[in-house]
Image (cartoon, rainbow, N blue to C red; front, side, top):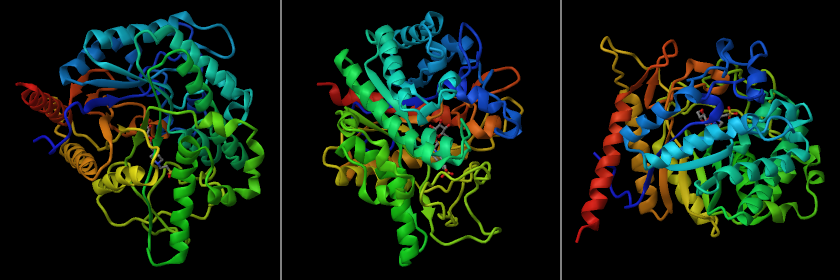
Length: 473
Ligand code: GBH
């Protein structure tokens, strides 16, 4: 059943994020993150759900690691909650740091490589109150926070990711209003974007000096597909989406410059005024890997859509704001492909195209890891408690095939992390959307491996057997 030709040594993992699984929102000295605060705003999160308890991973961590071992994961990608380890501007919270120290020990004990992300969208609320990511000072606070976590875990953690999807935590949080902190301020969003890049560069440099081995960042990248490839208006829409969604992140990191067309698209917000001397050099600090998160392509148009036309749905449909700063007119018609429970169109070949394109367009590209890919479905729990999530299995196999095909086409992809290990708090959608390969009963917190989890475990064990067979004399 294994997808053809995934290379020996390919890293098989699964991913989560602190705010989505930990719960224990106010325990052992943890303070509010922007997601705790945002969830208290009426209407911000579907059904009024909150991350306060989530899947209680904070208390169930050893059992969850045992589950990872059962599945045979090579690596576990998790994030550290800044508000747990350094609330506000105060002294480090040793109890919070101790949790991650125990997690890392459990993982190593189980033979699982810890893949640590420093920022998966949960800024301490105390820092948001000082302007959040729109305040340049937050970048320096991030560097200090990164150094603190490294001081405690650097003896055991080799793989460090600064940011998960800075696009979401800048443009969607500060302009789209759909994510915390729920602001709809285009200029603040551009400031957040630049300051997160700066924070990445400052932290990368600091961690490198402190001896971190593997440093990288995770971007969510998309294929911007023009709805009508022959229509110049749609071509321009795709160019704009590619600029703000992909190249505004890839190019400062890999080439040390923002794309000229992006700067032009956002000119009315005086983007360049945010960039100080030396920033671009800091941002382009060398990295050892690039994480790619990919779920769906974006079929984009520059024409208005009638209100009842089939479009890709969003939680609020941008009632609050619009994340496409400078290109607010973009629309997203459906292509008529099958869709997941998120309403995202399924096109596995898009993942292959994306991975191949990156290597072709950026000669300085470091090795790639697919750090997230997965799908939400309305899972049905059978009488006997089992979950036969056939659509998730199909999605998984098709996307692993796409990764294998990308490698055949020359992409340097070293690993894959399925999103997600557990059903969890799906941000503005709350607990309504389930991405896990392991089901969580939110009443009892009971974990049940879904069929997709079993299939994934089998793929991993087959890959391992094949590697051992090749390695034998
Ligand atoms: C990832 O982001 C997250 O890292 C993870 O925490 C999350 O649970 C998972 O995906 C599933 O959602 O064009 O403004 O309507 C998701 C990446 C990027 C997907 C933005 C939706 C559409 C936003 N997202 N995209 S918008």
